[in-house]
Length: 75
Image (tube, rainbow, N blue to C red; front, side, top):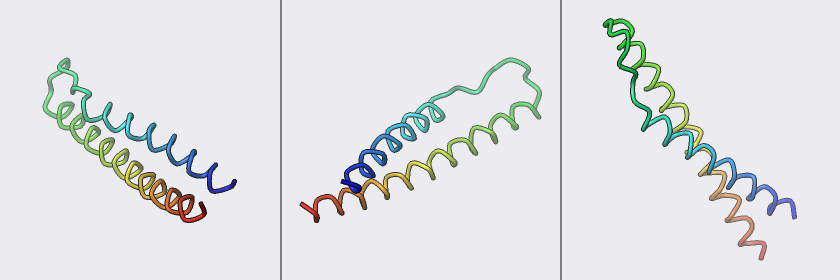
């Protein structure tokens, strides 16, 4: 029962992280206040956001694969 619960949590967290990653990738950089510093700072912030959500998504994907492997070997 414990592995079923962990696989459900892994699926839910993977879906949330994937959604946030897609949202971060598709979010446009605002056009207002066009100073060079602001534009480059927004690009760096977007890159860090994409990197962090990408790493979390990969970790939860790995947890998802491991938990499903445990569930299916238990069955």
